[in-house]
Every structure is written in C-alpha cells, then in structure tokens.
Amino acid sequence: MSDEDEAVRGEVILVTHPAPARQAGPLDAIKGVFSNTVGMAGYTASTVASLIEQTVATAVESSVNAALDRLVPSIADAIIERIDINKIVLEQVDLNLIVNRALDTLDLTQLVIDRVDVNAIVAEADIDAVIDRVPIIPLANYVIDEIDLPQIIRDSTSGIAGDAMNTVRRQSVGVDDLVSRIADRVVFRRKSRDVDAPGDPNSLKGQFVEELVEPTPPLGEGEKLR
Amino acid sequence: MTTFREYREALKEGAVPARDLPTLPSDAIAFQGERAGFVTRALAAGIDVVLVFLTVLGTVAVVWMLSFIIDPMTPNTPLTSSTDRLPPTWLMMVYGYVLNVLYWTVGWATGGRTIGNLIMGVRVVNFRGERVHWIGALVRALFCTVFPFGLLWVIVSGANRSVQDVVLRTSVIYDWVIGIPGLSSRAGAPKQAP
Image (cartoon, rainbow over all chains, first blue to last red; front, top):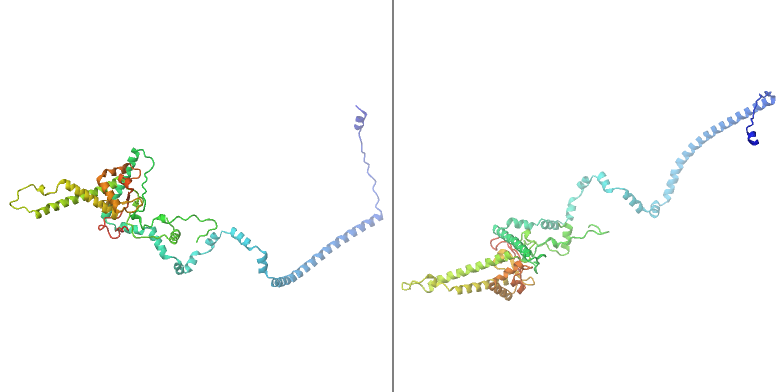
C-alpha cells in the first residue's frame, strides 16, 4: 500500500460552534426603516403608473376608435372615388385564371340540378319558338327512313301470290346454297364461291340502303358538336 | 342505326332517300345481285321449257283443229287414224326448239328475264352487269337449247357459272321483283327496268 492511498483514507471532521448573536445597532434600525420605505414607495409608484396607463389607454382608444370610425370610411370613399377599380382589376388581375379555378372547383351541372328548377324554366319557355327552329320535315323523313315505312307498307299490302312466290324463291336460294356447299365439299374447295356479279340488280335500284350513310368518325380534339 | 345528324349530313352530301318501294323483302336484300345457284336456275329453265312445251302442244292442237276446216271429213273420206292429221314428231321437236330459242332470246335481250326467270327472281346480265344484246342473247339461247347440260357446271363452278356463262361471259343473278305483274297489289308493283 502506497503513501498516497494512506492520505486518501484520512478523515475530515467538521465541528460547528454556535456564533454569538450580534446586537442590532441603531444604524441597522435606520437601514431597515429606510429600505422598507423605499420598497413601499416603489411599489406604490408602479401601481399608480399602471392605473394611469390603463385609464389613459382606455380613454385614448375609445376616442381614437370613434375618430377612426368616422374618418376611415370617408377616406376610403374618397380613395375609391378617385381610383378606377375596374381598370385596375382588368389590368392587374388574371380573371380567366380565377374564373377557371372557380369553375374547376364547382360542379356546375350538379349545382344547376340542385339549385335550379328546370321544370319552371321549361314551363316559362316559348316552345313554339323552339319548334319553329326544329327541321320538322327532315325529322319526319328521317323517322320514315329509320323505321323503314315503305317496308311496313309493302309488308302489309303485298298479295298472297307475291308472298307464295317469295317463299318459293327463298327456299330455292336456300337449296342453292346447300347444293353449293355439298359440291364444294366434294371437290375439296376451301375458299367460298365468288358469286359477286358485275353491275347492280334492278331490285336494289332506288333503295336507300344504310350503307349510303357513311358512319361519321368520332369527334376529334377541339371539334364541337353542332 | 343512323343518327339524325348523320342522316342530315348524308343528305347534305347528296344522298337521296328514294322511297319508291323497291318491292323487296328485307331479308332478300343481302343476296341480290349475286350469281344464282343451280337449283334456282334449273327451276327457272324448267318453267320455261314447260311453257314452251305447252305452247307446242297448243299449237299442235290448233293445227289439228284447223285441219278439219281445211280438209273437212266427208262421208266419202276414208276413216283414218286421227293421228294422221298431226304434224310429224320431228317437226314438232324442231318447232319446240326454235320456239325455245326465240323465247329465250327475246326474254334475255329485252328485260333480261324470261317468265321462268321472273318467277324464280333471276336475271341474265353480260360481263358489264348490263342486259345482254340481241346477238348475245340469241347465241346464248342457242347454246342453252342445244346443250342444256351446260347448266350442270354451276354445281361445281367456283363462281356459280354454267358452261354458257363461262364461254359467253354472262351471269345469272338473283334480282327479285315482287309478285307476278298484274297479280300483286299496286304498292308492291315492280318498277320497270330501264
């Protein structure tokens, strides 16, 4: 064991002795009175100051507010009178952007459905004026062609003799087809017969076949419905 | 289905909605203008041949009756068989063939149809799809009368053509008309071919 370890293991003993009470002198009494007086005066001064501040603030604020209430509208009116707000808005504001933003966020259709009484509008509308603009005759012709009215008339008026003959023809065409198919199978013909003859049959002349109306292509970009 | 807009656009582009009653059932439109098959053509030819045969018989009957006017029987006339007054068979056959050729020629050269063709709804056209000319019709009628078996080629032909069609470049197409003229109602009456 080294000497250093011996030193560490040494003990320190603290002994307390009560100090003798100091006698308060007159100077101390004067100090105490003075410090107390100063403290009281400071506290009183700060309290009074805050009271004054509050009173003044309240008085000033109400009077200033009253003054502002009178002044600001008249000033604003004077400013507005001297400024062309429309011009400023038109020049400085991107109205398209704002309107588009607004339209993007709104579902106008739903809005109209919810808020607008369409029936009331229709009830008030001048239907005659609308009908005047509708192409009635082309519409009637369209309906006649679309329901194939000539065919209906023909079907309801064709005679029994014609029906019987058409039945024979139809059956004959069916048998033609059957015979052709059997013969094609016998001679191992795979491709179908070339039965398209030149020219048009008289029976189809004047017929408004659907193929006459070319199907219109779907509307492209930027194209609008008429 | 055509929309009203498509319809109006078609009209603007010059389409004409002709409603002159084409006299055709809707289900028959699809095969109109196609070359007819064997059975239809054979039936049409058969009807024609029967008509010619009946005409020959009628002619013979008339001739037979006329013979009694020209050469009436008297009590002195020897009693002979009634068949003696009939023309010879070979003459009747020649007459039948000639009548058939003439009948088909006239039918095909005028309307492209004989009565058999009309009933079965077929028409004879040339290589342009038009009505055959008189000479063409005559040659075809002769060919068909002399060699009727040429029709059998329709069965195996890849284009529904008979031997006559192949040689003369003709076609027999489905081309219906409603009813028999005179028997059908006015609304279903066929338009005359131009």
